[in-house]
Length: 241
Image (cartoon, rainbow, N blue to C red; front, side, top):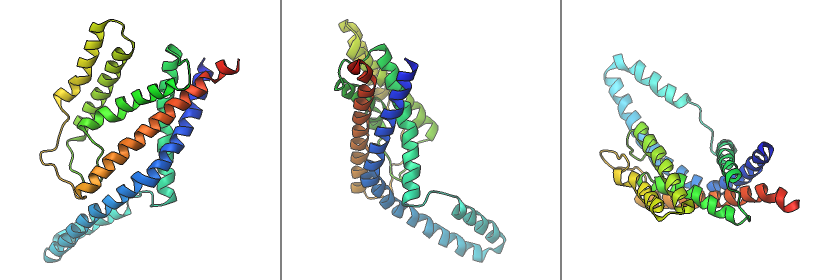
């Protein structure tokens, strides 16, 4: 059983990671690069002003130049194959982890047919992408956001509540438990996601909306591919027996 779960997670995760990386390279990454042009233009103006101030006050010039040099020397993958490779490896780790979770759930309640994996995948999309995005939509570089720790707590709480609520709606037999499931689904959104004091973004609003749409559709296709692949690899030994 452990070997079956591991093989399912490995093969399904690899396939879904390839799908996700291709979709991101074609649609999501170009939007991020476009937003970074707006983000990088603002610091440039700030650096020019800072250097002008440093010329007027020489005692601060060394610290300003040293700090700016440190920021410039910070390593980041270059646009092109380095960025794609880094994204692909990150996607592979995440996809295998999610596939391992699905395969573990299949050990408790195995899908009878491959197409049922799509339902599991859509459940994963709702849990880890759609529900959290209702309060914390995907953000482009240069977007104001609330404190990171608060957002992480809300995201985790929303994912847990969504998983529990969907589980009760899908598998509970008593109607009262299904009502509890609906209530659990609503709790994080009634509490509300942490928001910044002032909503602002360096990128145009149209670019933000396109990025949110691209991120959600890309994740939906990723989860659909992951669910179908995981169900196929998991049920394959039974079909060939």
